[in-house]
Image (tube, rainbow, N blue to C red):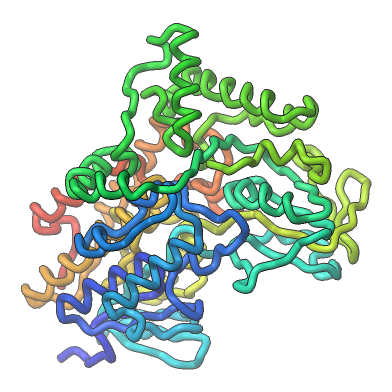
Length: 532
């Protein structure tokens, strides 16, 4: 006789993954307890409140599709929604489906241990409370653990410090202040234009230049929304057939860049530049697969940077020499234009890294810079950071940290062998950050719910991925990545932004193929899982 537990499932995280997972569990009659370290719902959109924070997937697609009533009633205001609007949406969903009461807020998981004898997870939090459950579902998000480099002298700095991924909820007034931003990834690129408008003086310390495409954001007209809502199911189906599960309203160009004349290439790149955003990579079908093809796109964007930025020396420093798209392609609202402002300065620290922080600022290349505040736009410990912080111990005392010492391994991005009844929503090994995350979240939450139901109907209490299935899946993920240009540069896809983190390409490339794989797993009665 197996031991009783407090609830059927513990759900860690109250972002979009945790909210939908909780909704499905409730809907199917399971008891569940949610745990969230923030004071309310929203996940990454709860923490990332920096100026200019905005989604790079269009609003009509970066939204739930499980409820047509929700789809029809919610009105988006922008083509690309900003953080405040997305957070309002998350709160609306929590209220509409009565999800908030099932979460304990202001509590961080500091331990999760599986007992082989009872087949129960015991989850502990920093509040001192524990909860036991048959299933542990990690909805901790891909970009939810901030990465602050361990600069020498960090504790010596007497001014204010901020991280874009943990921004004060009350906002920050930089009026007439002397500000530094370290980092020019997505959050830095989004924040810099707005902070530049407010700060008296802004110095950007660039470790690696980044490609960025204008978002071309604009108000979303009621007419456009109505047009999509009239055929929302068809719109969503088109989105799921695209490589990244978004771009339903956009015509991808499958042809090769080599099949176009120089004039046609330029016109095509211009068209996609003016359309804006992440879809620039779809200007030609081989941009993500062929280095020579990619270089045409690189040179086009570098040409745009040189046109926009008036100072030639600054423009060259801002021109990347990496593959376009091997790091997540950024979208912006006036990033390169900001460098034309007299109060904005660029310091390249790629060849002379920051030596240390001081009481008044920082030192690089023998020069000290003084600031009222320093902003770390230094990104996240992506995909694995939040999972490892929870100190998870699986079967026979195996810790997740030890299991993943050489990089994350799992099956389908959903289960890792040795950790029975533990699921990861949009974990490493799934399309995750290379796709529309809300679409991926719904797909995973539904798969997990169906798998639990299937196993319970057959009297099983323990679900685990077969080791051979995990090994084969890791090889599949690596093989698919190797066929692209993604692994050609140091990116957070590889964990390269975190010192000491294993260099492993973590996402699965290609949402439609991944979807077909999940369908085949169900048809084959979950043959690559082990039940007992």
